[in-house]
Image (cartoon, rainbow, N blue to C red):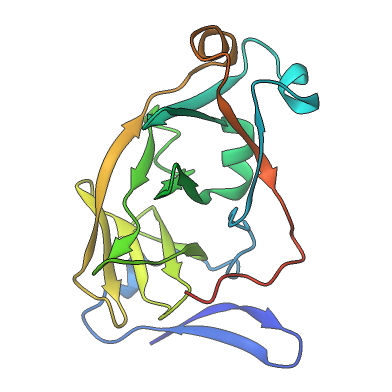
Length: 201
């Protein structure tokens, strides 16, 4: 079974390949194409202030977390556009996922540990859903992943059956509250370079 994953100049139509038993074909939503919502792979940040920092309204929704001595904030307006952030805080790789279908019913954003057998993998958006859940793909093998609650689990491809553990789910707070508690916070404001090649793994 093949699910359309978009068109690429020089290659034509591209497809994700699934095999019998990966999922119920009737549960697959209409595909939009991979990376239509383009994940952040090289985060642009401001720390303790900046042009974007100063323009964010105090009542704007953000999610935040701390790793080591670094507090980091992610505006919901940014997450709603990109859905996925492949980030690293104080040398620790993390994966943020905003499932637009689930997050409408729940306030939290999922954070996963993206290391598999000690090796970091990066994720992109597949452009389709299964049973109302946003499907991610990893750049190295194009295995397909879905949030099963306890972690991000591959249901198709080389990594089928493997799970990236859930680190935490982040509650939404206001930028004003976060900024008051974390005046030196790291703020993710977008992507450094949209013209840079996507990570290969």
